[in-house]
Image (cartoon, rainbow, N blue to C red; front, side, top):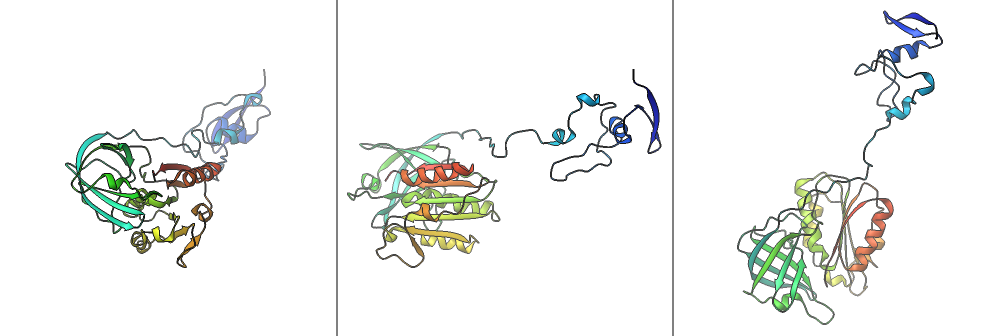
Length: 309
């Protein structure tokens, strides 16, 4: 059996084994805390709460630095909120207008407003066309009534658009919200990427974020095949006026490309992504896939939306 002796620490008598240091005695009696290794949060000194009366023998003691390391989920862990309730509505087409030669703005007035968050999707049923997933947004000037659903629709290479199947005053059935790409407040920098009519979904998120989180760092990258199809300039001017400093426009074709529009695919003009970024991307499959790969490479959260051309 090891010999024991009495030691006075800070005016308090402590019984310890022969060979222990005064620091061992004070730690074992709970008089001071162990050294912490989490960004200098604590140093040897008075502990916030008393420790255990005795610690294991020297051979069984655990390195106090290891004890100080935080336990829990990874920094990138993210708990998804439950899916919102889905509702059914009937609606009537009340407005159809061309934004460019290849982009149509369509407005559906519903019988009662849907519980949709920014960036949410809806399923729209059409006779002869089937079920289509669309992305409610705002007009390019930011306006929309509570019972209005605004859509940006593209014309394909043959000149056909879904709007051709939805003449004025036609009735539609709408179910939503669907999908998981809606805007989520909080987190790191918000990186919003859109190709073509994917800007509709991105525009609803960007505008909401400027109202809900005006100090959140926001980056917007917008692309189109033809520079004449960059129909969203009024929307982008509003974002600039609210303090968004990084807005990038790009176009594949150089014909009539303004000086502020960069050449080439928009993926060539993305900012360097970080693990703390939250990325929303909407557009064609090649653009969405490329952004997903870049986000995954750094561990950033990415919410993709494929827009049917």
